[in-house]
Length: 166
Image (cartoon, rainbow, N blue to C red; front, side):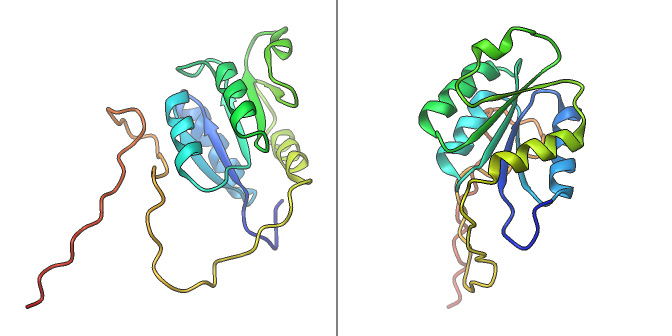
């Protein structure tokens, strides 16, 4: 379990809502920050517009193809640890980018936590900015909670003008 430091961000790209929610809950309980998305477009939007993501856990069969997403992430964000989940595909390991890991479903959550923690051991510790005062500004794509969004990437919040006080 991650203790005594800022939680590491894990992006969970899974089209099956139940698997996505249970995986996110389990990792959140272990002390990680989780971001849930349903497809490759949402995953790439989060990676492009959000602060650092340390781990990607993607289903093989998400819309847009989880293996393709793994290759894109490996090329564009080489420091992100990648885990591809599947219920089938004995030869899938040959299709994965270097250093990507295969998690076969059904997977044991304790094994997932250990694998994620092992993949993060080499990262330097991040400063805890929780004591910084001042307003926090929106950082792009909001965390997706599983609600159906027609654009596929979520709606970005626009600033609200202050009311006229004169």
